[in-house]
Each structure stands twice: as structure tokens, then as C-alpha cells.
Image (cartoon, rainbow, N blue to C red; front, side, top):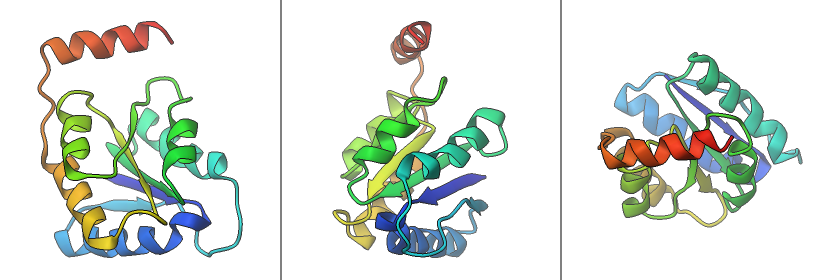
Length: 143
């Protein structure tokens, strides 16, 4: 299950991504928002991060205008590794090397088709483990 959330800057792209996930047959939970009314992105990151931490969702996708703010907010949660992805290669490395459970996208800077490619790449990439796990362990030791 993938948790999906956004602020008003990511509302349109979130809806496109949800439709894409439905077409792929991927289970998801929509954590909002449900309109373009202004909200604070830290509040939007919270339910997705909590769902990933609790195990309710295996992964998450968060979207704000640039992806920057919501990725900063998500990475404040202990145990979360959220990666801002603006290209396919970053999405692949976010999963393969960093085992990022959450990817963040910029709804105002990432086109729909590119977003689909980023999401697909991240979902279909396996974590490499090995030396990368050692590095992740060091990150979490610092929390």
C-alpha cells in the first residue's frame, strides 16, 4: 500500500498520480488534501509519514509545489527516508541506494508524464543492500 499526500501546490499532480496508480492496479490510500485551499505542507506530510512508520503503508508519495518543503518536513520523522526526486535516475537511486520509503515531487515543477516515470521507477527498483545498508544504519544511529 502506498500513502499519497499533498498540499495545495501538489493537488493536481496528486490526482494524476492516483489515477496512474489505479491504472497499474497499485493499492493506495489518499491522505489528502482534497482541494486547492491553502494548507501547511508539514501538516500534509504527517499522516503519510505516520502511516509508513506504523506499517499501514509500505511506502509514500508526497507532493508540494516544489517538493522541497514537504521533503524537509517528512525527513524530520524518525526512521523516514524521504527523497526529493525530479528525474528518473534520482528515483532509481533513492530506492536502490537509500531505500527511501517516501518520494517527494514538485507539483509545480514536475510534469505529469515525468512524474509517472519517476513513480514507476521508484516502485520497480529494489534496494541493493550491502554497503548501502551500512550507510542507512549510520543515518539512523544519528537520530
